[in-house]
Length: 116
Length: 111
Image (cartoon, rainbow over all chains, first blue to last red; front, side):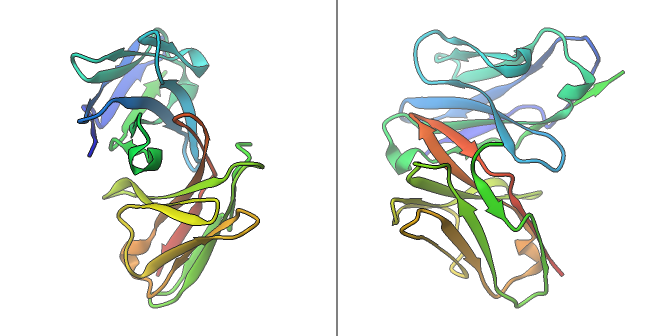
């Protein structure tokens, strides 16, 4: 079984400031890792994913994340946020081997609020 | 547009009633995953179908059932509805190794 912990339920920042949203996971098997974004009253949009290879993953809208296997973390970062980045962000994992048929296990989410 | 279509977008119904949520995956995608998003439980995996067959089951109540049809669309049936079933219900397709695309969801309100 896998679990995901998003360490901050809310992160308020000012516009143009850097931001880091923290995600730790627990799994007995190798995993794929994802970050999704959900804007108000919308569905889930994939920001980025780590499948293999370089541990630094770049995604859409200037976001990036770094996979740290030893710390079982996959923190999301952006060097300079915009008002439009205000949304809820979800970290998720799935079993790399196809266990449970690749179902996603999500964290509880982090609400990023960007203030002017 | 993710290519995953969910209908209806909104649904308001009374306790004790039964509803059906529909999902059409992206063209060519064989898999459908259903998730429930509520304020207290967060995003929970309900059930997965692949090419018409149930493949994995998560935290799905016995009052809920699903199926996938030969044209690959899927329906999630929720019966004997309770106030606590009010939530956003998403379906998703697995589009590549480990990748998913989600529909825009059905917001169910039970009154």
